Image (cartoon, rainbow, N blue to C red; front, top):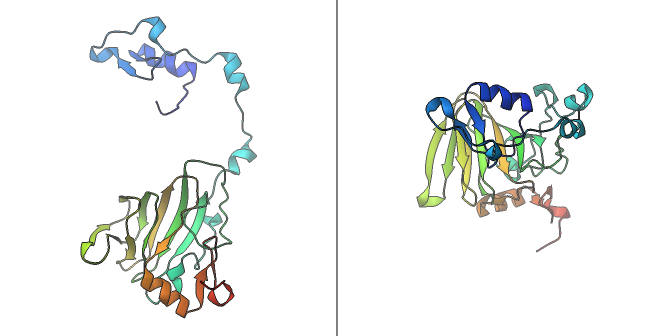
Length: 231
């Protein structure tokens, strides 16, 4: 069941409607004709002692785990290509390290979740990439029209995502995120894993960024190229 632990009252209410949960997390619907599992095969409800040992959260602790739109901290220097005309975006971290290359990016929610979450904003006519990362990403467009280009050179394929579209991007593939409407693209970017995503940029973009005196330090954060070690 994905690690969900149900309160005993939920199991009781479900049973009144003919639904049972077995010890191997399989739901059995007797109302649909399935036989009721034997009692020894059903999941054992939590005891009151189990419930008493669970952590409780104060309203203040709950609030600390919420990021409102007003609390988003946007960086317009979050990707290497932001110094290249026609490129760049703004990124606001929410959960985990994400893909931002701004060393000052600091997500409010830092404990491991198995994924990172950021918001990305791309002005009309601008794009991010081509780049690739090893992790999978899920994009949910909130505003604007996003064009997602996968592949490189003669193997490129593209698709457009309108508001509330969800796009799953495979890991290890070249990608470009482009704002093609008359309004900025605003989207959430969920990146798999707890580790920071290290971006591999198209070689042409790297050269153009270097010409603008921008590179990346050994940790993958943006820095003036003139201050970085050579080679």
